[in-house]
Structures are given as C-alpha cells and as structure tokens.
Image 1 (cartoon, rainbow, N blue to C red):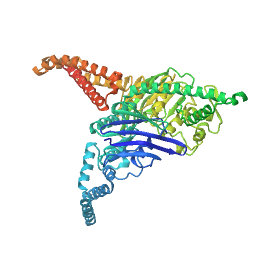
Image 2: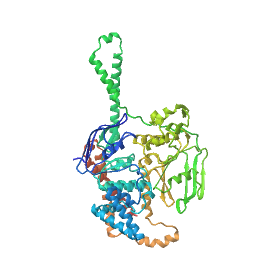
Image 3: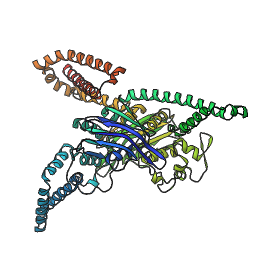
Image 4: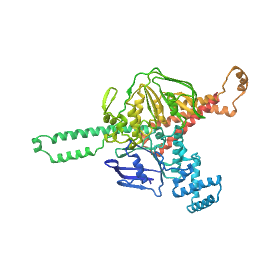
Length: 628
C-alpha cells in the first residue's frame, strides 16, 4: 500500500486554480521531486498533504499511523534556544519538557541551587510520566548523526547550519515521509553534498521541491510536474524528462493549433449572412458552443521570461588586476597574498564555504573595499551591474513598477522604447502584480524583479552573487543562455554546481584561512584538477641540489613490498574490468526501454554505477601511486 495517495484533489485561491483533480501516490522508499514554475502551487500542494490547508475537493488516503515531517524553505522565526532545544521541540509537548530539563541541567552544572534542583525533580517526574527518556535518546542520537553542537544558540548559527538543525527537528520524529521545500537554499556546496549523502543513506521516503539540478539528478527516483493545475508523473531521469517534456509540449501546441483552426472556421460560419442562417444546423451550433467553452476552460502555458541585457561600451582589455592582495577581519583571513588578472570577456566562478568571504572578495575585486596590503588596478571604462543576494537594491515598501521605473512610464532597452508594464511582462509580472508592493512578492519574483532592474543598465561587467535561489528550472535555463551569450565580463558566486559548469570558463576557489586557488573550467573541472594536485603532492619534492643529494639514497633504497607488487600487477586488469562494466551499465541506462523499468530497479542500478565509478577512481589513484 502507498504511504499516501491523493485522489482528484482540487484547490483554488480566488479565481486561480492551483490544483485541478490531482492524482498521485508516494510509495515507500521513493524519492520524488516535485517541479513546476514559480507560483504553480507546489508549496500549496505540500500544505494540503500536511493538513495545513484543506482542499476544495478530493480525497487523501494515508497509511495507518503515517508520520509526515517537513522542512520549510525558511525558519519560521519562532525557533529559540539551543540546538538541542529546537530539535527537541519537534517532538511536541514531551520534547519541550526534555528541552527544559536539558537547560536546567546545564544551569545546575554552572551554579547549583535548591530551586534549580526542585525544578529538575519536577521535570524528571513529568518526563517519566510521558515516557520521555526514550525521546531524549532520539534527540541525542540525531544530534550525533548530524554532527551538531547541542549547546550552541540556534540564532547564532549560519544559514546552512540552521537548515541542518531544522532537518534534524524533522527527522527526530522518525517520519515515514519527509517533505523538503527548496532544501539547498543558502547551503554551500559541501553542505549540499553532505545532505545528498545523508538522505540517500537514510533510505527515507522523500517528496521534495528543488531548483538545484545536480541535487535533483542525484536524489530523484521519479519526477512529478505541476503545470496549470495538472500533475504529470514522469518515470524518467531528469535528462530523459527534458526530452519527453519537449515532445509533449510540441504535441500540445499541434493539438491547440488544430483546435483553434476549427474554432475559427466555425466562428466564420456562424457569422455568415441570412442564407447561412436559413440552413443553420442546430447540432453544429451546439457543437460551436461546446468548442467555445473548451477554449475558455483551456489554461494557456505560462510564458517564459524574455531577458536581454543592455550592451555597454567596450571596457579596456584588463578588467581588474590583483597583486599580492591580503584582507582580514580581525584575526579572520579572507584573502592572503593573492594575485590574479581578469581580462575582458572572462567568465569567472567564485565558490567556497558559507562564511569564507565570497561577498567580501567581490567587493575587493570591484574596488569597494581597500585591501590591507597589495595592489588593485581597475581597468578603464568599466560599467558594472551587481546582483546582491540580499536584494538590497529593492525597496520592500515600494511597488514593483516604482522599483523599476522610478516614476517613468516607459523605459529604453537597446535603443527601443517600451512601456514599463510591457517590460515587466517580459519578466512574467502581470499588470496587477506589477502594482503590488515588493514585500508581497515571493523569493523567485524578487529575483526576477532585480534582474529586470539590473538589465536596464548598460554594462560590460556583470557581477552575480547567488542569482539562482528561488528561480524555477525554466528561468534558470534562460538565465544560463543569456549569461553564456553575454559579451562582457562575468563574475559569478553560486552554490549551483550545474549552473557553474554551464556558464564559467574558470573558477576561483576560496578554501578558507585566506587561501584562494584558480582552476580552469567549472566545478567538475575543479574536482578533477584538485584530485590530480592531491595525487601529485604525495610525490617527494626536490627543492635544491643539496637536498636532492641528501635524499637521493633513501629514495632509491625504497622498494615495493611483495603485496604492493602483487597489487600493481592486478590493478590494470581491475581497471579494465571496471571501465568495461561502467560502459555496459551506461549503455543499458541510456536505452529508452530502460526507463520503463520499475523505479526501484533504476535506483539500484544508479547506486551500482556510482559505486563502480568510485572504485575506479580509487584504483587509478592506487595504480598511479605504486607506479611512481
């Protein structure tokens, strides 16, 4: 039996039909990704499943004693106290007692009083009444498993660690089904990879929403899409989904074109003169009325964002040059003796952990922050547009129109005059939405508005600090295309691995403690180059002739053990076998017929492939080491 099954669920907000007779089920062990355009109703569907909102029609069937937990997009603001307190509160009233007992015990350790002792006795009795000690063990276990500090204050944590604590609060209830709404927002790459591994290892049933395509590809065993109130199940991987979705859209367009042609012909017929009226077929008239009703009921697909940048003047060949630059906040090093040269047309990615100082580094590059030491030379004729992740350039109290046009009725884009409402329509803002205050917009809408505002300005340098948060997959694809075709210089900070790989030509990695490294290519290229560098650093380095003469004899004297020799002899055959097996598996998984198999079979094959690829990487590294 399915964990949960939705039958003909409908839900409206005003005149907008978000869910129209939605049907789907979640089976045990499935990891289902829910995708759809911003505003399509994905979060509303989550709230209906959780019971926070009641559907207008339909039925939800749940397995007996089903436990559902959810991780929201953002903290609610009600989370207070230590990490232990916030996680324990996920267990309801019993959890609150455990949190209070934890706090009192810490106070007792610091300052024993009879009052605290009496309070501890009272809490202990209440906890025993509700069999709470088992729950306390669950809290401690999940804290250990997720590598959290139980005593640190929740509000002092970074955004990434807050999300980890909130996930722990959801998991401590041991749910049968976990709902995740944009779980990768505000997480750095290492945290995202940790979350992927953790969720796969837990073997928990998931229903999740994400814009992170790498996260989607790694986790999803099935994709469901919410489009114009209708839910479609796609039993494919993401790449095949894109192909099948395109085919379905083309078929829909052909069907609608034929329908519209027939309707137009019938409208011409009904408007003919008196001769036609005498011979009018009443059945044909009824059929025309039905066609009109069908056309009225049809919900047209939401258009795509129409983005274009304003071409600026040409900048100088050198955009910015850093020479031996260092910068620190007190004892915390952000940049330590770093040099680089950015040329016109470069597309640079900047990656690093949360708190590494990526935004600070951007300000140093732009000349907004003076370094503690070293030189910065900015190029000539720079026209910079800057997307900041906090969206500080938007006034939350002003309307969308006022934020964009500042009182003007029309704007100019690449020499063409356009009405403000029309331009906002290119970014999917309907006229009534364009008059709403910015504080009423969703995160994705705010990002689109900031992009619309920035792209009004002529530029030859584009700086984007986390532009992908909250954007739907279609808008991400279009933003990728725009950036790829941008003629100026791009500096991009992002935790979206797929986005980085498709856009940048080189990457600056902030490794912590002020260490910055440059690599050619995107995120995957950096991983490969880093692996090669680590392998090379294991080889003994010869600094000078004197050292060489001193260390030459020991190096020559070192020989392979019998076990090493045996391994060296067997490794080439093992590598060849692994490569052959990987190729066979990849061929099998790329066959269109493969995607008709059960989702659990495909998930098992995916795990096998990842294991073989990992074994091959280890074998190569061992072989290179023994060969050296």
